[in-house]
Structure formats: C-alpha cells, structure tokens
Length: 382
Image 1 (cartoon, rainbow, N blue to C red):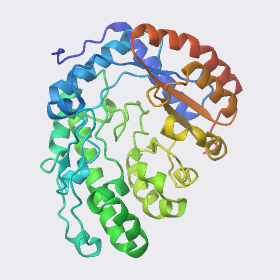
Image 2: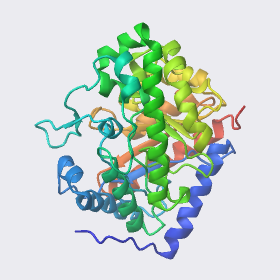
Image 3: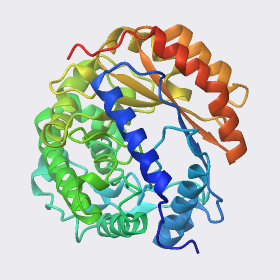
C-alpha cells in the first residue's frame, strides 16, 4: 500500500504557488502569457472501482499514485495535483434512505436500487432531515475526506463529495420520468423536496470542510479536483440539465445553485453535456465563473458558449480518448483555439497514460496555448 503521507519537496511548494497564482489570474480575467494546460498522469490501477469504493485505503492508494505520477511532469502541467475522496454521486440520496445498487461491471460506480418516494406531494414534507455524520454513505465520505487530507499533509488539496445536484438527487428519490412529470404537475412539492436536498448538501459541504481542516485545503465544495481560488470555492453539478429546457432550469436549478454560490463563492458548474440550458447557467447572480464539461458530449456546443460565455467566464473541457479514439489531442485543441478565440477561453483537461506521454503533450500543446492567449480578449464584464 502507498504510504499514507505525501512529502512535498521544496520545488513543489514553489510550483504549487505558481500554479495557484495562474488560476487566480484566470478566474479574475487577467491577461496570461498562455492558456493553462491541465495535464495529469494516471496512477497504476491495481483495483477495480468497486473495490476502491468498498475500501477507503485502496481508493487513497490510487489517488496518491496519480499525484506522485503527475508531479513527475515537473513544470509541464498547470494542474494542481489533488485527490478526490469518492463514495458515489448518489450519496445524498443514500442519506435519505435510498439503497445503492452495483452492476455486474466492477468498473462502474453504484446507482440507486429503487426509488423511495412514490407520491412527492404527500411524502416530501415527511422526509427525515438527514445528518451527514450519521446517514447513508455520507459518514464514510466525511471519513475519507479527513483521511485524504491528512495524507496530503496540507500540500495536496482534496475535493469534497460528489453531490450530483438537487434535481439529480430528486431523480434518484423519485425516478427520472416521475420527476419530469412532477416538474409540471406538482411543482410546489418538487420545490419542497429540493429545499430539503439543498439543506443537506450545504450541511455536507460544511462537514467536509471541517474534515479537510478548512477551506484552504479543499479544491471546491463538490467533486472536481480543479483548485478554485480563495473565495470562489462554490461548485455545483447539474447533469440532468441536459434533459430540460432553460425555463425549467431557471425555476428548479438556478435558485438552489445560488444557495451554494452565495455562501461559498460562484466558482463553477458541471454538466457533462449536451447543454440546452447554456445561457441559463450564467444568468443568475452570482453566476459561475467556470464551467466543466465533457468534450464527448459538449464539443458541438462550443459555438453556443462562444456567444453566451464571452467576457463572462471560461470552460474546462475534458478530453477522453476512450470516448473519441480517432481524435488526436493536439489537433483537437488547435481546432478549439481556432474556433473559440478571441471570445471563449477553453482550458484542456487531458489524462496521459504515462509521464513521457504527458510531457510530450505539454510540449506540443504549449505553442497553441501561447497563441490562444495572444488572441483572447481578456477581462470579464462582471
């Protein structure tokens, strides 16, 4: 097993601060010499996803392995190595009493066995008020945050738990089809359910921050392992927004996201994609400075964001060669730069198979990132 401690050498501490300042500047819209390049190196996977969920130390081993491998890139990345304690994106639903279900594939994360709310009007007001320290998978998640934070020795930040987002949790509890019908037929009852979910989410964030030792030791208030600057740690997820329109988003997502942003800062929002609600993501006040999207599901939406997000924020775009095996990352990013500059900044998030590949990718992507930065119309309008 990998040692449960991480020793940061002196050069690493200097490099961490360089990278943090880079991200502070990007979040502030200050001109950069080049667009950041988020390149990571995967660790050695010796255990399945299910085994890592069922054993916190195996999951920590895998996270530390990725950190150690990524540090071997030296200055050839702008990612601040971080660790992600994870107990599944249905952890909030589990605290309300939903049971996890594992598929036959040990590399898949768990889902929910069955919905537990059949009549949202009658049952939402009667739902218990879960406690993140005692209910469902949340206590295990809090323990993992503390364990990972201790292993990182204050030098390697940790994410908090994957909370999925209010509507996603409601879909776990009600069922997806039933939720979509309820949005129209019983909207007041859905709001009652969402208020309860969001109170639990905020309580879970607070418990996670305490377990990590303070906000300065976390990446965001949600699952991403992107380091967000001080005062902008708030992050929300909304994958179900791929299936609804902007009017429903404005009514049933935005007000609850605002509860997180107002409390922890408006750092970011996740949706894998596609993005029919792209404009609604940023219409609120406060609205997220960054969006983190999957290229496989959001690539075709970049022209929409080029208009909606111009001078308002930027995108982390995850490149997964497993999803698009015929796409080569250097040509992919050059095409994005040509398409999106000067209006939209896209930060590539690329996972390399080993250190040599990661270094080669950095060297090949760097000239594109420099040219991209020269083309960008820097500065935010808000």
